[in-house]
Length: 238
Image 1: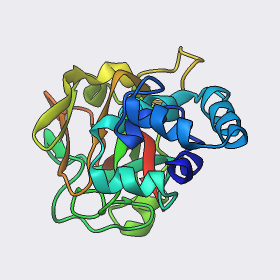
Image 2: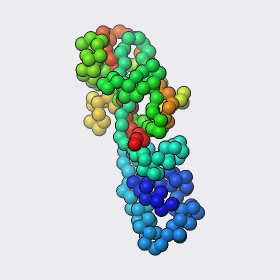
Image 3: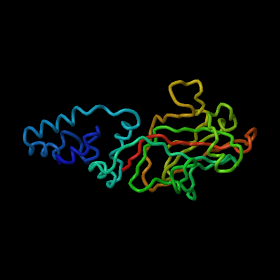
Image 4: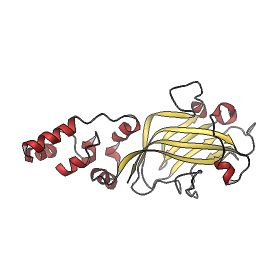
């Protein structure tokens, strides 16, 4: 037990990783009693004086209990860590329905950083917020798409007046919601095009990610317009 406690000292929600309730749990109390006084004092200091986590990391720690056993074990043993991450994808606006993550997608730098619309094995990701930006490319070549300047939706009214939804394993993370939430030019507290989720949700490894943009019209959308979506949060990584 002591070795495991030392391995997870960087996390505040240690009990959830170990599968115990906390300092009142009989297993943890028994382990503390078996330690010599110096070990016990050091362990209690680590458990009680750890600085509070902030941002999406603190949100992720609340979901430790929902992580698969293999990921929990990796975190406990220090084989996995928590890291900031943004899962992104760029898609053309060629119809009223745009699926931002698709099973035929391959990972390509500058276009998307996941393959087959799924996380790799032993990665779990907590969606804390979402970026949605748009831009008009010089043409539809890969180089020009990657070189596109993506901006807020303030000058893309048809897209802003559409809706989006986000699902994982067919379960709703965000139900049909107006894209207007991404118009943030007057809000200095968040980045451009960023929507902070009041209810962050966990995406497990090897589970289909589905984010769909629905437009009511194609009016006034320039040719070669593309949408950038970034799911922002905390991920488990080696």
